[in-house]
Image (cartoon, rainbow, N blue to C red; front, side, top):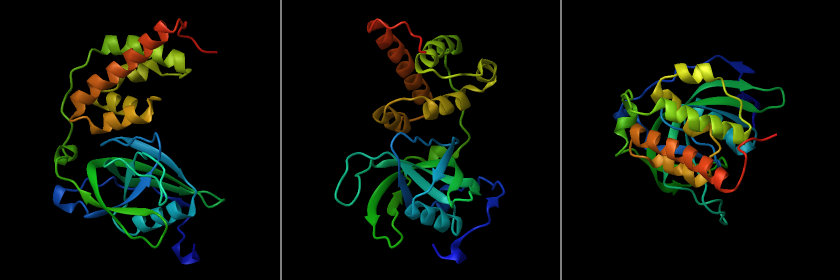
Length: 231
């Protein structure tokens, strides 16, 4: 990468910038990454080290700082096919390491449908973006209904099985909409389950799905005769 394209070793946190629907771009750079779910309002940290994705970040920083995360499907001659529903996030923090990697944070902005893939000269992939149907992602999420005691019981078993440590006081004090978004992104659901969570019509449906997935995983563990603990 040319020296002129490099950035300072540490870049201060940036404003997330919430665009209006009319300000969303017609094309987006796309980062296919298995299991890396980004949702609107969510925060996704990424370690960027491949030259093509270093170039992608450089180009995003020089424009609107938007990158779309998408789940790969199957490997192909020209790269993996990808799901058509993705989520665009804006780079809100960046650090450049001494070995040339970028540590970035994406703030989820809005979901989109990927259209035609466009030619590229920088190695990363770009697609036409269709935002219709997801304008609600740009609005402040409303309240959702969820049985917090039921969720806490299921989470305790689920986290114990997966060896996940949790700050239960922080979980208890986190608003339901933020908690569901965080759980959907960080829980070790399968790639298809994470895609289903992304495609949920709204936050209430996503909340219901998160609870169902966690409870089903616990029940499956019981059916297998497991103790629910992991050492």
